[in-house]
Amino acid sequence: MIRIAAEEAWAPKEILERYRKLLAGKPDSWDPGFRSLWGFFLGPSERATSLVRRIEDLGPQRIADMDATGIAKQLVFLSSPGVQVFEADEAVSLSRAMNDQLLEKIKARPDRFAGLAAIAPQDPAAAVKELQRAVELGLKGAVVNSHTQGSYLDEPKCWEIFEAAQALDVPIYLHPNTPPREMIAPFLPRGLDGAIYGFAVETGLHLMRIVVAGVFDRFPKLRVVVGHLGEGLPFWLFRLDFMHAAMVRAQRYAGVQPLKMKVSDYFKQNIWVTTSGMQWAPAIQFCISVLGIERVMYAMDYPYQFVPDEVKVTDELPIGEADRKKLYQDNVERVFRL
Image: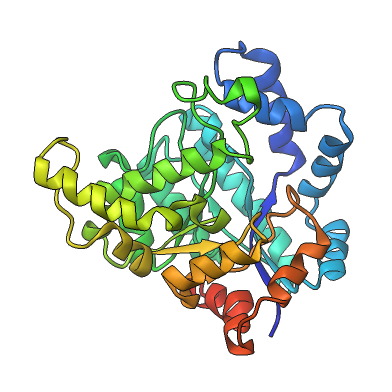
């Protein structure tokens, strides 16, 4: 058994410089979530400077941290919001450049890194072309950092991205973003917009939009991976099933139509969750119990939540060694075709 971490962030210096220009050139009201997130992490605090040093590195610093925690391999992708914060033309060209750079880093250490492609949902047709190119060159799927300037993947214009992922037989990793401008106001006064809560609310909403829109009925072999133990949704499966069925019967919403299965069934057929940022044995065991051991994968959430001792939580889970190997290695190798 080896330990593979399946949600590990990377952001090279070039993209951080572009973030700095956005922070300097845009008004505060343009994207309060982006300003809250990267206005802090590009600032002078010790936590921020430590994170930037690690998130830029795909070399000695990161490998030393992996060795210190017993992580054999990382599945790396461009950190939130990635290219999705830029205008379409810039996002398309930048996604290609970032993917080429990631491929070069992986080529240097294929024993330690695999990666997912950045794509630009702002231009779905271009996103499809870049996904096809990146997968042909060796990347293992796509990351979408949740909403793209307030737009979501369940919108029909984006369905060709799902079609391409299914045809290529690669997953989409739905990674968090801060809530969009239209959603973020109640989160900001108490600092709840980021990983503490806002990420889960916004990304869980995105995943539920995809499910309720019927995306998995249209693309039954599509694989979607979501971190942080499913952003809390596994705990809600009973209620999601009950309330969705009630809404369909009542014909309450035009956008809520019958599905071929219960909401919870899609979590057991099309959706996988990782333990990123949630190294808490009761929650991990709950997800295993309701989704099955084959649906749960280990992740650390490096470097945002780099706590070496947290690996012990998974090492000491009261499960058999065959299941522990699934959690650390087998599931991620199968889902991402590593």
